[in-house]
Image 1 (cartoon, chains in turn yellow, red):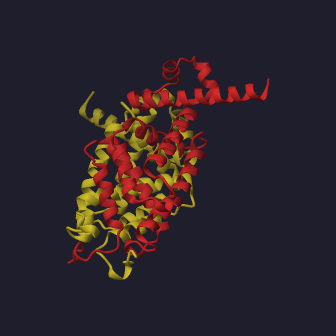
Image 2 (tube, rainbow over the protein chains, first blue to last red):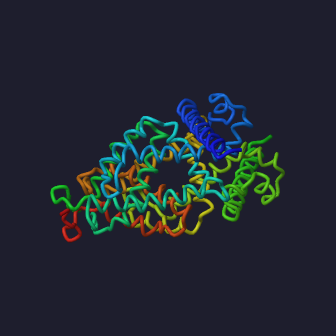
Image 3 (spheres, chains in turn blue, brown):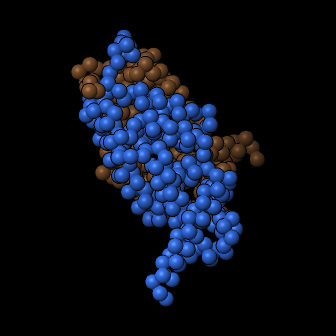
Length: 204
Length: 204
C-alpha cells in the first residue's frame, strides 16, 4: 500500500467514525440512554453491528466518544478562547442549552453513575474529565471574582462545588422537569460574589 | 389460620426482610455495587435465590429497600427531632460518616444514575425522595439562616443547591478519593451565611 493509499484509508475511517458519532447523537436524542443500542446506531449509519464494533468495541466506548465529542463542541461553542476569558455567563448559557437536550444529559448522568462502580470502562474518562474541569473552572472563577469569593473561599475551593451543582441539578431536573436548572444555577452564582450588605438578613 | 397465627407469620416475614436488608448492607459494604448479586445476599442470609425473590422481586427492589432503610437510620441518627430542630452541623456529620462507607454511597450514585433513564423501577423512589429532601432541607435552612440567605436567596431556592452539592461531591469523591467531601461541604456552607464584610474581596 502506498503512503497516499494509507492516508486515504485513515481519512475514510475518521469520516466513518464521525458519521457513527452523529448517528449515535441522533439516536440518544430520540430514544434516550436506555433506548440507545448498538444495533439502532448501526442501522442509522448503514453498517452491520460487527462493522460498528470495528470502530467502537462496546456501547460504553461509543457513549464515551459521544460525550467527548459533546465536550469539544460545547467548549468551542460556549467557552471559546483561552480559559481566562471564560465567564460564568457562558456556563449559564450552557445550562440553558442542556435543558433542551435531555437525551445526552441523561446519558451523561447514567454513565457517570455506572462509572463509579468497580472496573467500569468509562471510569478513566470521567476521572480525567473532572480533574480537568476543576482546574479550568478555578481559572474561570478567578477571572470573575479574583482570589477570594464569598465566605473567604478560594477559586480552587469553589470549583468542585460549581461542578457538583451542575451535575446534581441535572439529576434533579431529569427526575422532575419542574426543577428549573437554569434558575437554580443562577441562584448558585448569586451566592458566590463578594458579600452584599443589602442581601444579608440578620439571624435573630 | 387464627389471627394469632397470621400475626406470627407477619412478624416472621418482617424479621426475615430485616435480616435480608442487613445481609445486603454487609455485601454492599464489602463488594460495592457491581459485586453485589442476589445470589451473594441469599447465601449470606441462608436462603435460596427463589426464596430471596419472594421478599424482593429484583436486585433493584432490594437496593431501593437498602437505601430506604439507610434514610430512616440516618434521619434517626443525625436528624433526630422535628425538622425545624435540624442544623447544618448535623448534615456535616452525615457527610463525614458517608466518607467512611463508600459501598452504599456508590450504590446510591449508581442507582440514581440508572433511575433517570426511561421506565426504571427505582425512579419513583428517587422522585419522591428528592421532593421530600428539598422540603425538609428548606426547613433546615430557614431554621439556620432565617428567610434570606446570601445573595438574597430564599431557603426554597437554596435547598436544591444543597442537595446537588451533596450528590455531586459524592460523585467526585468516588472517582477521586483525594476530593475531600467534608471540607468541600463546609466550604459550601460558608457561602450560604449572611454577608461577611471581612471575607469579601473587591473585584478590581
